[in-house]
Image 1: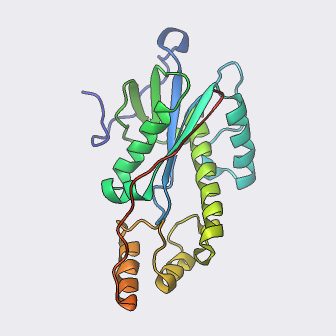
Image 2: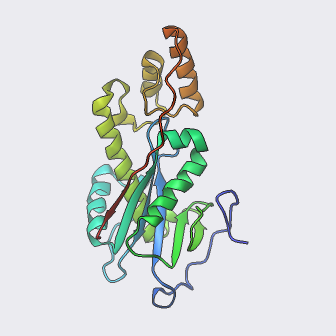
Image 3: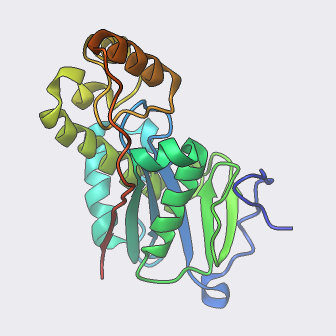
Length: 233
């Protein structure tokens, strides 16, 4: 029985795969499961075996400057790649795990080329119409997953910087939506903004307190939306 989003699986062997015989191999990773605000982002990458990119690694191990440089190289030199999101509305409606699987599914579907196999960082895989295998710690082990982790991280960090311009009181440019002391204090003072995840307990509590202070309830959550970007089309 194949692994699903609800059933963990063992780490899969890599050595037997031959792209000439079995088809292209894509790596998939996400960024933004833990923050209190903003979309969860996933990326899918098919690297060019004839043009290896030096320095790929788990995005968390890289400096912002190194991530940005590798981001540009990946988009320019990979055979194809795609970045996709699941919105805050979808996170609140589905839960963060299922929204992450949805973003991963969208990223794979956004690839210009169809992979023969998809390797996903972690112990779960989204529902796909191609072979998908989870790789625990894959963002540090598999170059295509490392590349995906970099695209997802840079994309989401840039989203946070852009969103900070609209809601500067929360400091999204610095904490990227994570529950830092500064962020929690801003939530306490200002209440949640439209991009806060109200299904997350700290945001839900801040929303409740803001509603009590204002004597009103927050507006209903809007319709879900998502975005997918491609390159090398």
